Image (cartoon, rainbow, N blue to C red; front, side, top):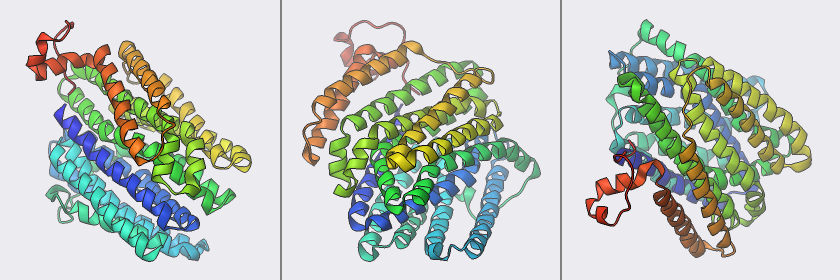
Length: 483
């Protein structure tokens, strides 16, 4: 439990800082320049996730059972440098042959930021695979602080999207030096054919799926840029930052760790895999569902506090759709997809993501001309929902995932009550109102979790604090604290 909390806090703090940066950038950059910055972020997202993410996932999947870790790490680093070289060549050819000279500085800044970000994330994945929570915390929070300082300073000094992206790259570079990771050093290059073959068997199908997923997540912004211009991209990005970032950050703090625990359990004690997966699912939805409900309930005040007035209306109108899309995306990425990854059937993930991509493209082309950014948000939700439903159904034939119905119902009930309570407080606005709206929502939800005894949390509390036993009502079974 302690390690899971540390990982969660390590993602939550940078998420809060990212919202601070977003609030500043919407005020420091002109809407057109902020739209270009958002476009650059979509390029970074595509490269770091779509092109390189399979290396990090392969590292997490294979580190626990690697007989010679140095060969695995060295091969991963060799693949990283090779792919980076390919990206540089492709970017150069694209700028020269595609007539994109006006975007040269933006593309260069995005490419540099992507390479440094991937280098940083590989180090974080190793720390997560080895369950080194403190090292992960130092690097993650360090990056959040450096990003807040350097990106804000660059935007204030130059008001340029490209230079702001260069500052983002510098933040990742400096944060990566906070914890030396000699296993992934540039002097440790290795190449082993057997390891490379294993990485390819696991990673290449996964890279196709992840690549399609990044296109899916970036397609809305690219089509908005093509059909409506950079201001629409800025409006959509600001709404996504306010409504999706808290959800995705919380999920990102527990999802990869939950996957690492599932892999370790499968490798070391396969009989306990079902119990571990049930626990992973309840913890995941127990965090993302109330987070999404809180964001929707307080979307008006969040918009007023975080972003500039130009973006308020889009945040409020897009909040239900983007929050729901974030919930669906996290459940698929951190639970449903686990079935195919544990079974080494990652090629199937590409098929499901391709389905979402087709649905998203069709809906965007239909809805953006008439509804603008709202149409993009609706398209994103239904595209993710369709692929998640199909993937969940098919996962039953690959690696059946447990669905703890009783605890799931308890989470849904607790979230519903919390939403109704917080909604009554939504008429109050301003930062001071937000400072008590959020704690009230957390207190209501936490109380319900304890009352309903989700994941036998009362047993865990009594185990940790024996003095409470005399006041606690009887509970069944032995305490089962979350891993």
